[in-house]
Image (cartoon, rainbow, N blue to C red):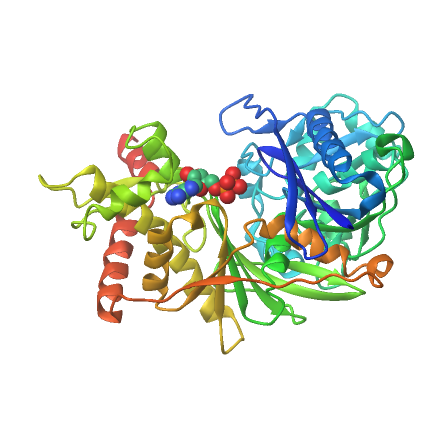
Length: 496
Ligand code: ADP
């Protein structure tokens, strides 16, 4: 039996998943690691802990499958998270600054409107602390001696894929793929090169950047001593792009949405790059054999996290899954709407000053109504994104494919189909992200002669709510969102 191993390095855990010749996930190992919050809005990881937990889970899976049965590794990873290390010693000079970290928000807001336009045209991204560029600048500006080392060519910057590759190959390979590069805000997705203007803007020396390769490149081999035998690294793909590939969204107009802590929607744009005027990001989906596909992306900050909040802070239930039976106790939301802007609102509102709100509460409101409103809020936020994607997408026919932990909730999926008034498809293979990395491995020339079969089983949800009722619900939702917007700003204006 041959296995491809997906190295799935996420925000809260390192995982390794073995895929068999039918591309079924047959064995998984997982380790959580520490989230470090040094200041309000700061989020860090220890890069050595990322590497050590990842190495442990890979070793566990290699031992389980037998090293001789392993064809190769595909890497998929949390994107944008920024690590800088010493080229000679391999030791990080600072913790990894995680994508969620907001420490460079003020700096990003201070950049001129002129730059905002230029950055979007070059990178497809909206200037924000989310992306790597301002995080790299922060490390170079704040870690003693870093700038001098960088200017002397003694430092390496990598997103997590590059860091893992460097460690797997013991410093022999310093590379990334186009999907990860496109999230740094330093990579020009028109020319497919690091952009000198952006490097100047953020004051970052080019020497610290890795080489950018196709997603299905041969990235090198792991060092022999790690697993008793070198294992080839056959693919690298950022996590959301991997989920898009894993869901087989390979045609123009195919859309996937991953429902985890947040919700991440991505649609395949094909080979024509389009810059969105719908507040969506344009990004590289992948590059296969020199051919790049682009994607549009939109995200909801609080998706499944709203259910976590009801569970942990309001003690509504013990397990997230119980939200479904509780919400089913009532026929509808009883007039309650929940705007889960717990950390502001993402696309299409982009309002960091909005805050959460539950409105429409009456004497008869119960936990069940609020829980139902929370599930509806997930679907309504995703519905807003879907509408933007529909408007922006050149495709005539659009199919929404869903994955992620919260898609286990059938009521949520039904509400989702009702909100968008379209059929949605859920893949029975839960591990779309890891599967995407494995599928990318079989696009590598080293594996082309191997025989892989991949069949998919889908569960469909079709709308049962009338269009009129759906429209009314969406109207009320927008009304509620409107009332939650700029909440922090309005208060501070009054205080002044
Ligand atoms: P992540 O990869 O972001 O950690 P997962 O894909 O594991 O997320 O999904 C976990 C999220 O989904 C949590 O926020 C949890 O509250 C939510 N969730 C999990 N199961 C359910 C469910 N049955 N109903 C509603 N939400 C759920």
